[in-house]
Image 1 (spheres, rainbow, N blue to C red):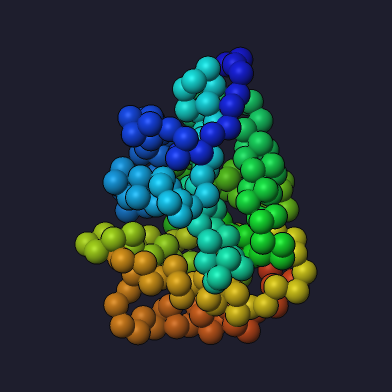
Image 2 (cartoon, helix red, strand yellow):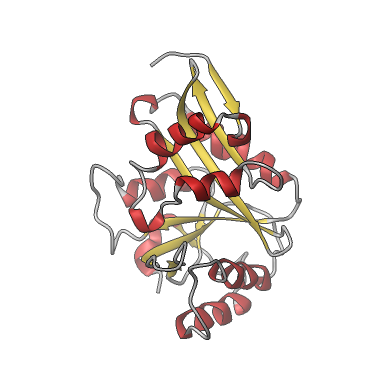
Length: 230
């Protein structure tokens, strides 16, 4: 594929174009329990207070999308979704999005903790739809990602949806001196979403306690040591 590439936000697109991004890029890439509905996508990423988004258009057609969200009074930024059309691989879109666009988002709040959720290869085998978790870790590793050294569960997105176990949490930034409390606040606020655990969740409480005590400079793991997370 050779084409002129243009970056826009979801808020720049028409309602039908947003639906096209959802159906063409997000729905084929993410499992149902990980996927926002089209209404949730529109509500969260268009209009006043829209969360960060970028859609890469090639000759007017969406070929990549990245979405984010701020937590902990904008001290933590989560890369929530990243999807690339298989026909557009090889165009350097991963570099364009992670290094350039995500870097600009994070630069809005200097010193922010930048995180991403990925599949744990011990729980999710490679397949044609979700891809290869080990290859994905290597991809993020090329941009300096490091592993939070304890398991992660993606909270349920809405009431009735299931949480997604068997995940890992990556740190993507290189900012020194970020306190573990920032990670703890992210975990707490992320779990407080509409589908998050009700009441006191023991697993969440343990993760928050570990996060508060974690040295985010010295205690993280290289991505190739994913089998040591526990």
